[in-house]
Image 1 (cartoon, helix red, strand yellow):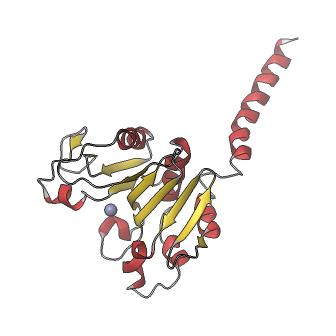
Image 2 (image 1 turned 90 degrees about the vertical axis):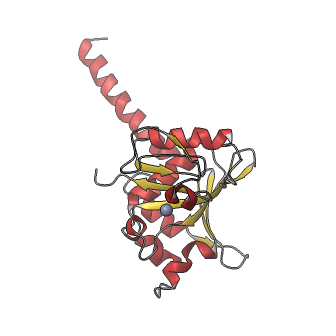
Length: 207
Ligand SMILES: [Zn+2]
């Protein structure tokens, strides 16, 4: 085989390798992920619960999760979702598939008068279910230890490079004014107490 053929093969292989994940994942990518979420939303028989299934992960929105959006006159969850930046959906999608989560329960997404949630770059998670069906309520009563899966997810989230802030019931990172690195959520400061029952994520935008 001559060298040019080898180079062509190598280029072709890179092209195929880059295309393949897209095909396997049903063509989901950073540019269409928002549309996939919004068009995939379904209502369940249980009153007020909407969800979207993307690959192995079900993303669940209960009625309370967009209560404050409804208070501004938004009557359709799709309108609420449309106010959220695509980077948030991409983070959620990657969180689910890369960590093999079977469920992610979103406790708040877009809401009024809430700084970064209002500009559509933040999401709050209330509970998650692992691949083997273990549901973890994201709640620290002051003495509970961070579950192993959540520890893994917190590190994954930060290392993904997709986020600027992770504030959870057991640990947090990326709060302005705090030194760099991870902190235990000691439930001593207001911001810690506010996050004892959910994980707040702020995503990076503008790539
Ligand atoms: Zn939040």
